[in-house]
Picture 1: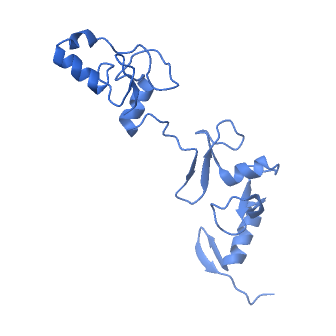
Picture 2: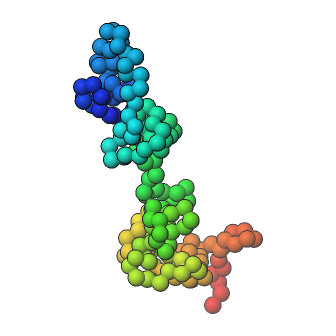
Picture 3: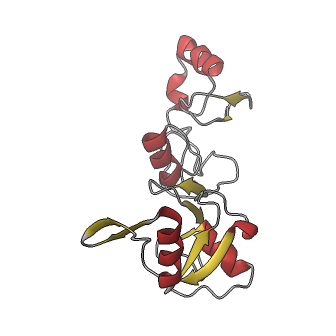
Length: 173
């Protein structure tokens, strides 16, 4: 639950109940003056750094309230670096030339672009040591799709295409 300040004593409170901390709320409830606090909801979001006006629910603007309901926290749920199921790392960089529509870019392609290498849509970035999360510039090489395929075929000794997987014949010249 987000923290705010009590409208009565000014202490930081962990529960939001009519704008009061737990101690002040219990004091007002016992004395019978709780009705004076019925409309004590703030007119702006109580989350630090947010001053969004509008409908306030539990002391939060709609954006922070929805985040709290979905995630249990008002922090931004977007992660700025995550590993995809394929093993590649995606980074959040909206507006970058290598970013997709959702604002994420593959880290290895972004790093090569930022280092000044020409990385077109038809080019591929090869991880020299084969580890997809090792995105050091020294471990990355930009190459065409056909060259990239040749590197992997030579390393594995197998050809994989739409017809299946085949072992390379080494008896030819």
